[in-house]
Length: 319
Ligand SMILES: Nc1ncnc2c1ncn2[C@@H]1O[C@H](COP(=O)(O)OP(=O)(O)OP(=O)(O)O)[C@@H](O)[C@H]1O
Ligand SMILES: [Mg+2]
Image 1 (cartoon, rainbow, N blue to C red):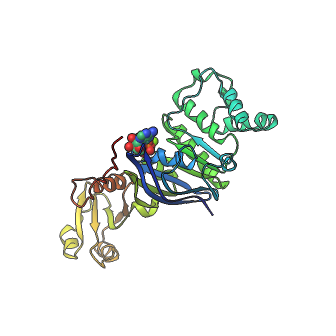
Image 2: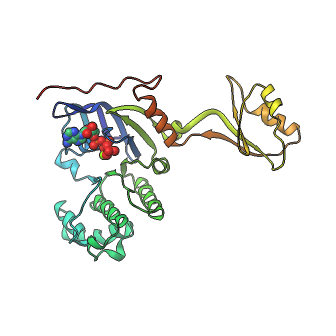
Image 3: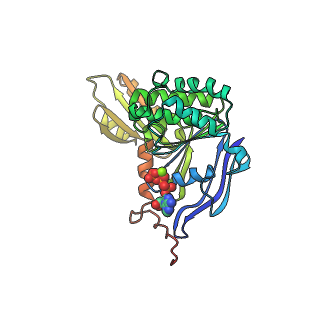
């Protein structure tokens, strides 16, 4: 079931700045979906549209089978805004009490839920301390707790691990996995591509308001036809012979990178090395990181770069 569907969504600010220019995407139930893009690409604008905070200029957006922005769906959605600031005179617990009340949770539910959700983000020991005494990472965890307070079906997280240390990041990843296992749909914006690579099932790359790439992380980072090969220490790689077999070859310190040409397979090379009595110690198909892919994709879309498309003209009208 699709939890989020957008069709050709356009958003123009003050009739001049086109932040989104025909964005169509689907997010399925229980998916961890990553929205990537450079500063100003339109990520936050899209999230705000899905939350009903902003209206679309054109196109259609649905959440949980309803048009975005209905009161009914809002109750099923959690949101961690980017750069949130909570009133510092609250404690973690009193802040959630406040949000729980806004969400019209019953007193009993709030009492049960507050320690539970704070425990899930590792803040149970500090729930009665003032927010002013929290570290940046603790504030971020509290933000996530706030987004999860009412046990939503869908959560939107804008930079969830911002300011969180590596151990905390791992804990957040584990928490997101546990939510996914329960069928919660997670929509994530992040600049931390290493993180996105570890968490997300599927990603979309947004560039100046348009989708320029989408797919599963595995699909996007696959680099078909390039292998890295390494022999046991002290063994000499038969460079000339391998070249003569028609493979493209380049050296990477202790490893060799083998490029397959059309229709070629890696197997004859492995057979050859073995037949020479060489001991193969490393053989993997190369993957690029999500960061490599992101930089390449975005650069290819930049104006002035060979093969790039020209920068889309912003719609300009005189005020
Ligand atoms: N309220 C606004 N009024 C006018 N223009 C806006 C407004 N909000 C955003 N924009 C513009 O819309 C475009 C997309 O902004 P948006 O905040 O959605 O980007 P983003 O992808 O979230 O960027 P970042 O990674 O920096 O958070 C930018 O050109 C931005 O300047
Ligand atoms: Mg943003």
